[in-house]
Amino acid sequence: MKWNIKKAACRKDLGYLVSELGIPSIIANILLDRNINNEEKIRSFFKSHWSDSYNPYLLKGMDKAVTRVIKAIQEKEKILIYGDYDVDGITSVSLLKIFLDLLGGDVHYYIPDRLKDGYGLSDSGISKVAEQNATLLITVDCGIKAVQEINKARDKGIDTIICDHHEPGAVLPQATAILNPKQKECRYPFKELAGVGVAFKLIQGVNKYLNLEDEKSKQYLDLVALGTAADIVPLVDENRLFVKEGLKGITRAERVGVRSLMEIAGLTGRKISTGQIVFVLAPRLNAAGRVGSAERGVRLLTTENQQQAANLAQILESENRVRKDIDEKTFNEALEMLESMYDVQEDRVVVLAKEGWHPGVIGIVASRISEEINRPVVMISVEDSVGKGSARSIKQFDMYSALSLCKKNLIQFGGHKYAAGLTIDELKIDDFREQLKMISLDMIAEDDLVKTVNVDMEISLSDIDDTLVKYLKLFEPYGPKNMRPVFMSRNLQVIGTPRIVGRNHLKFKVRENNKIFDAIGFNLGDLIYRLSPGENNLDMVYIIEENHWNGKTQTQLRVKDIK
Image (cartoon, rainbow, N blue to C red; front, side, top):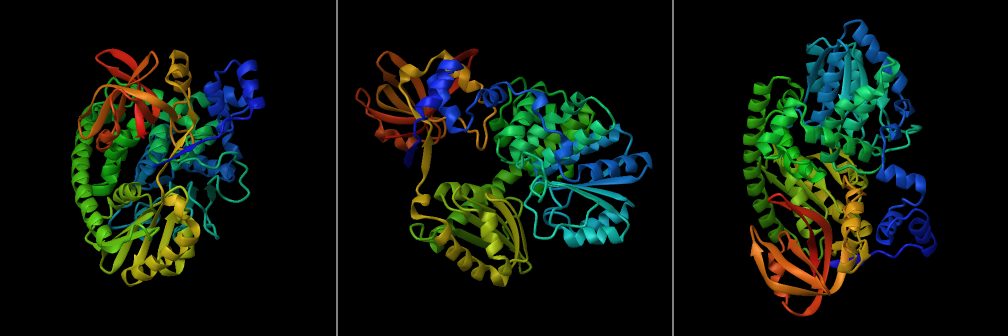
């Protein structure tokens, strides 16, 4: 693994933050590297306030969207919310359903079946909307490319409001209103909202129109935080504000569905972080859309009945266990295929296809393999001569742009830089594979394939004190573009006997002068040979965190690599 140590900040800028604002130099360096470089930005970052949220009417189309929603409520029209089957979509549908119900709307929802309907707004989905006699369709976390489908809805007398955050195509659908900060000529200052964030802005817009206090909108932020963190969007700006506020609501677990989900996951009474959303709560909600019905997730998050919530949480738990078993089987099959088909020294992108793979898990497996080999991975499940694929990428490869160059070989595709979905004729898979390989030669340099850890600063263990830990906690919530700061220290002494605990976790103690810290490296047991107790020869990359155990809290170092 290559260690990429960032350059120290400009002395002039550093001096200003340290001397004028009283910020420790280590923290000031990290802030400057993240372009948080003046008093206003620092205040907003460390002490964000609800008033920092942007005016929803900066979103292009908000006036039309709000007017149409109000009309539908006043005239008792049937409203149908149509969402994607992942956590972003499930939470988007849930919060709009709860909100519009409170306003007295006649509200229904539909989430497509991953296997039968595929991703996004489909012809079959429009037919379902028409069958329910809905006259207003609100899409959430999908719809921005559904040009033909929305034309079909219009022909059936159905108006559509699109709430989406994916990249728009060259032609926009002829909807009544489109809310998407990425559409052209949209003045909204933050472009990276999750789908649930866009749906939430619609709620804010309606509340503003009705002269309701914006504080009332905050009751939905637990759902916004769930969807935003789970969708792995940049956790900066308004996303960070939403998640920071929403985590408080999740921790309080006032919503019975969220409380039941936390109970079944063993998180009751614990302070919830973005990591627990991504790795514990989100997989259980996602399991509904992968191996069951995503509508169960909506029922869980919208119910007010404790027993129903407990039953639904138990079903999701069971489905998540099934999903894990399918994951593992698919992962092992994919690794075997990888070993037989690919030269990991030469191939810069991987395309794997097989009949019978479960379409609901190939995205997860693609992520695991991409992390394992540090290359973009596309996994395709083939059924009836049609392949449904999920693509996961690395930092240096824009998957959406690459798929755009391959569109002649694809039936359809969508997504963003790091993750995408596609549909392809089975006969075109080989051509697609070769074309993507050629594109990757231009887009990925050889050095990009070397696993790299970015180090914010080199420090001494003596720099780690209560003040530093206190400031680091102010960086929370962590996520893309606001990751935990990573540090490096040199010539540390390993004391005592290193050991492997749990499932291949490396545990040991390090000392520098009179400072001693516990260190743990998850899944790094294979590196125990690099530790030489008693010698001052260990260089280590790590993050600083608090370990809570048996009612005690102590600072520990979570190891990312050692040399």
